[in-house]
Length: 509
Image (cartoon, rainbow, N blue to C red; front, side):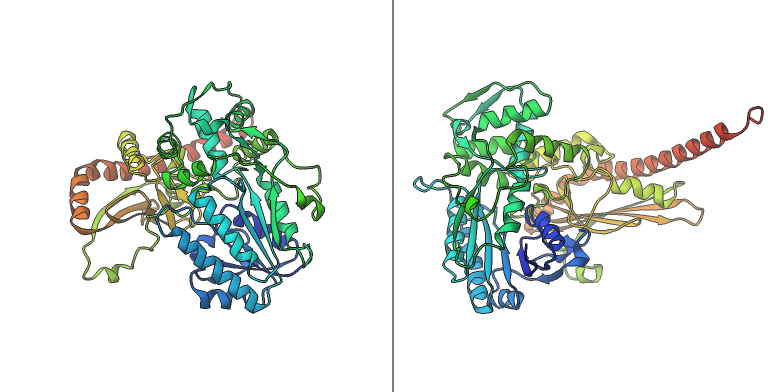
């Protein structure tokens, strides 16, 4: 790839977060345009890029961000279900098209969705196709790559296949499980995205990209089962499963929230296969060839076992979830705010206490009343929220912007302070803070604060309705977290003593 000045939109997303380091390694000067720069606080490549805060809906801001840019990567796609998201996407695409043409951009690379040319498209596929048409009509040479189901560790499509197969020994399924699909490994998508920047200047068109295998959705599930060491699942195609009903089913039996399940399922209503391989005339296939489906699954599972998942669907912004940070305490003046404060001393050192705090959630649990947490998660799922099963990307370490079950990490001062912002469906905005501070006696003080800004009468009633549970849940959390920290400290002391004991010469015990 020829080194150039590149702007990436969607750098906090699944594909963008993996593409940026590849562009940097190729010698490019990379700028990222993001709405929330704090999501990039802990990414390893943060100090190698120029970060511009902005929104694609702001035409003036887009023009400023594109000044002096050679190549633009358009990787933004709304996963919302609100009625005006198509208009939002049109405006964003037009702003980029106009700014690119006015600013002398020489290439736009867009990642859209694979779709049939004749069938009626879902709202989301229709919107992605329209974005592609707007960019192609910009006057700037554009490569609109059209990919189907992307298979990789952390991708929404892969996670949906994985959880459906893991959870259900028998799969009642919609009739679209018989539709043909041509999945593509995320590594091959990234390969084509990087290479597309070097296409000849006269190339302005769409390209279908897909892997070597054409499968039915049921075959994809059973291919995953074989790679995961599971027995193959019997699958029954039931015509009563409408797309809406299927999305509710996926929402309930997998961690995928309804807002993400709806567009995925809608895109599976038709065959989703490559109709042309013209990309081969311009870009040679990846070294070693395109990645087959089973190998892509094997690679994804390996990444997960090694804890090496760079980006994940979990970090996608959720429609309706609050994205505003917690105001500072002085800003609360004049607002109704409910808080729950807990403080507890432990003999554990702050470092031992912090290890417990940072590893909370996911498979490690919440240290208090598991049934109550599970019920709250199911309640959230039923109303279309994210639920408690999103888990966490890494079992031990958290980063700003990471998802943690139905929370998101808003701020982390490693070793001392963690603030989580609620993304469950609540009539208001909620946060949970945990702090580890040194105590005068060499131990530590654990502080825990829940903050809730109610919305209307419903918010007030919600807070008082769950108040009795707070006494159990939040006090239990404080007690068990400090107890776990003390146990961790004692385990370290015992291990150190055992090491010293076994190192003494014979007869000196």
